[in-house]
Length: 172
Image (cartoon, rainbow, N blue to C red; front, side, top):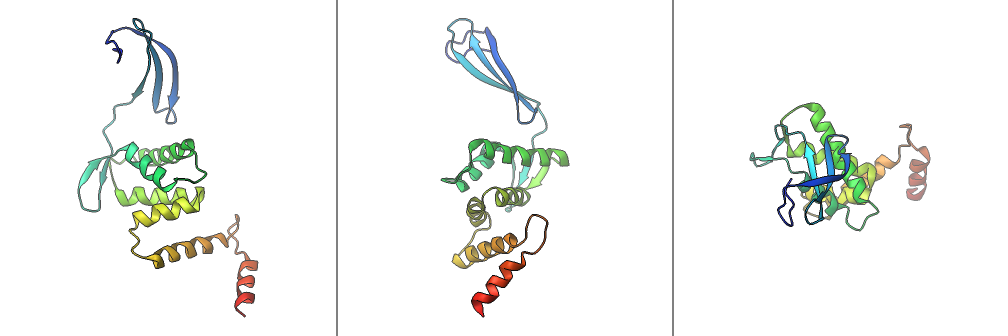
């Protein structure tokens, strides 16, 4: 590997670790000539995943594009970069398990929303508003009401009867 600073062809590997659930390796290297450290990544050269857009156009899957969209939706929320990376890793794992080389952008959007809904509801609504192209506040309101309806179920899938009773008492 040539040094990006001095173009010297020799270096030594200082540290190696697996990333993306073992699907890639990150290596820290040090140039044998100038001593500069730099990072390289190794991954399996697979047939790239292609995304079919709603317009019908097909483009190569771009992890950074997906990361950026989740980062924007998560801005100023208590969601760490590692949680965002884990969310994207999880989506990539599911797509790789399906072993399809082409997937619709709609499918990926739904996968992101499913995971964001469980992670942070504000980030979920932000992402959904762009993904579903909300046109007015009534669409935001409908989405928030759906989230509230889902919250009425506890972890066992049972209806929270007290929420309904409270609602009826307030209106009655």
